Length: 502
Image 1 (cartoon, one colour):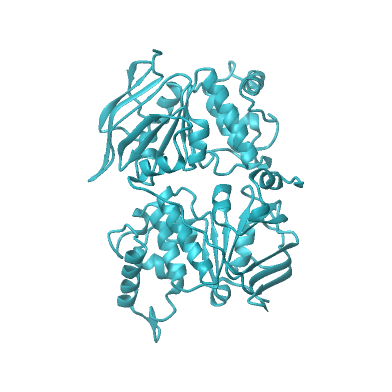
Image 2 (image 1 turned 180 degrees about the horizontal axis):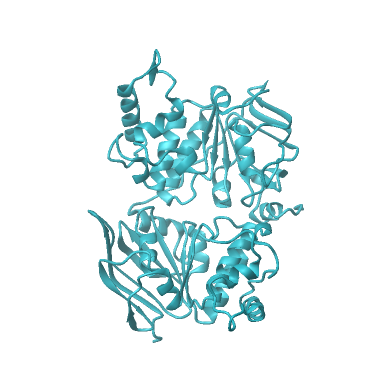
């Protein structure tokens, strides 16, 4: 049997009384693509941070090529051939591709070895299909190209073990397939890959074996085969049977929100250009597109944070001349923003303050100009119970909640206002299957009640599960709006890349 590239044995990591990893074993052979699965808070990121030198383990050992090693920093990890591609990129936008690759690399005497770097970039393209123009500015690269650059950086630094954390969250289906081809080529050369994803179909199609963490412990380690289903993987993650929410047929009602020829002014990287959309009561409208193609601008227009330069915005058939967050909220627009940690909730505040901040001037939270703290505590306590929010209580600091519980808190706040239209941006990004199912159940309940839901997501699987129609954005304009029965992953993927689909 081949010598393991990596062996982690009995890894335990504690944060105070919380045991994030509890005697975890993980091994990686040359040519392995290992899927790492688990619910939010299961310990996946902690385990990889131990491997990459961010945390020191309290117990356990790590061996590379059979030799025990101590990893105290990312520099130690890189020196041992371990590279990690994070969800958030670490690139210098004002520099070229080649300049980003050469940062931190040894030069040739007193000069940078530009010729050597160009040759290495050409070699990476030939071996793994990861090509980029070396002289292109990073600021002009598409999101998928920036991720490719991050992977090339890891290879440039001699990594033989490559860790990827949710790598397809910002990719079109075609870009994801290109990434998978590159990872398979790496595996064929004897690299080891750790692939972290909540997309179970990706785990099944790409990986050779899977390790499932639950509450910091190994729940399962198994070889991947065609016989293993998404449902089985979900049950291993959650510890119980998990069925997807049912989307019954729904009668659509009146148009609750419409944009007619809406454009926005400059000042942002992407402007909306002649956008026409409408959403009716009793339907879920999905918004697809690669990150940075106008989805955030659309959300900000609907939420009243970005003014309309031309065109018409209507809510319930009434034209809205002057928009603001307060005006749109008063008209029944609820919003679950993409950035839960800053725009949505304030992590430094107690949960009670965070959840009612946009509502504090309203009854019952404020009477005759005075804040009713008792009413606030009662409201937040009720929402914690109703939505199953895992928190120590209304006084818990918001920043201590996991991503799934932050999302539940945001939903609880917005749904308490009985919105006519709920706008949700990237609502299940980073959430495990159980938390994602809960969020989708709330959307479907709104749909059944005759409300409208707009879901902006880069996860096509999510959009196909819950949408009635999907609108595809590219460079600030609507490429097409397709009923779900007429949509396919291939067709949506082409539209996302700016190509007209047949």
